[in-house]
Length: 201
Length: 400
Image 1 (tube, each protein chain N blue to C red):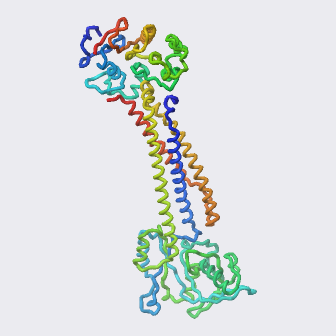
Image 2: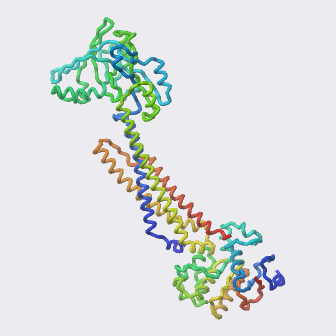
Image 3: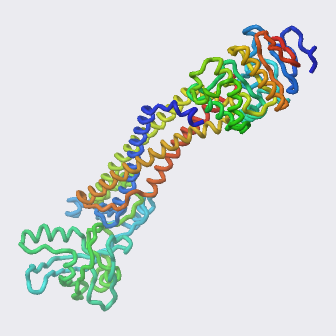
């Protein structure tokens, strides 16, 4: 897929192919449908006309069991509203995902927490953390599975610059390890990612 | 995952639903068991309430007595017609003696009065007799004749004659010690036989002798032209059948009222039990409904958590199983407590029956009751499980 395929015009109503060997920024102002597009790709919504295919299969025909498989092997999604289990501890939130995928060891997860400076919060209830801390926990949870595409919906909206750099490094590192790409929705900030294609909505 | 969903359990609602279920379930079990018990009681051969056999006779009016009305015998056409009815399994005539019998009852050494009375003999096929028929047979040349007397005769003596005459009452066992001299005469012949009471019958209100004896004696002492059938005994499929009652009335037959009354008691009792089963089922269905409602509320309350589990990749089946698991425990508890309550009530009821009514029902629970109980429990589980999996599946589908 060449960069020229995407102009500064909106992609809605056009044909567009996203390749997991590549990473993308979806850029627009609020309310243009960035989150909507991501939830179509992740199978949370199907209220659209036209067609979306995932691995050449029509999104609307994918069974709910297949969605579960996709969500443990091929697609990982950091939602804008984070979606943590507020009544569970940070550690329980992370192991709930990792128990399903067995992707990382406990030591590896602790290392990731440590990088974000969150290891001391390991046993705290997720609901008690600040929004920024919650966002970093949700990001770590996204990385506890193999994936071909990492979907990130405004992942740095509540994080300071230092932590953005740590998060960027972790994301790039995990994408490389999985031989995968990411699709990052942003309000226009490009976060100086290299080798990414920007899609405008 | 258990931790993720289960915090939303509302113990109060759950306890109430469970209590309702236990109540309904216990009531249903008890009623189902009573059905079986009533069957046992009413079908008990030796019991006085014998509804499967009826004795039919024609009404005897004053006109018959003074000879102005037709006779009260059954002809072969009428017997055939009775036999052809759907609710009649089998019919047999009472064959009567056509000779004269004089019975002399007495005991050597005289505490008891000697009684002498005109008597009669009848016979019915063995399968209609509701008493043990040991030594029930007679061959030509035998001087002893086995006899089966109606229970009412013994009662009439014990509670009537014995009281009036100041003589001791007798038991069924001792009656064998009495000698009954039977003076048989007719046709210009005369003979004396020794009567031997071998048993008593509730069903047949007549003095029965073996058919071989009656056939022989009728030939020897009787008048063949007098051989008529005044009573028939029928085995019916169901004494409560309304068409049977209607048939008896329409043809002007009479039957032993006591037996039909027994049928009525049974009918009323069964009506009550049906009503009980209905109430039990209504309560059970209501509590099943409560559980379905409860599971729906649980899912509604845990919607966020369930959706989140689905988002992070958990399969809907895994989530459903987890929720169902907690319900299985609840249902097992309901079943266990209900069976315990049922057992306690049943033990008390069995004791009450034995003490107050004198009926011994030893069984605690019949196979039917257990199967029904387990069946209802499974139905509960199925209904709730089905509902839960449906709801979770709905949440798993992409919004469109």
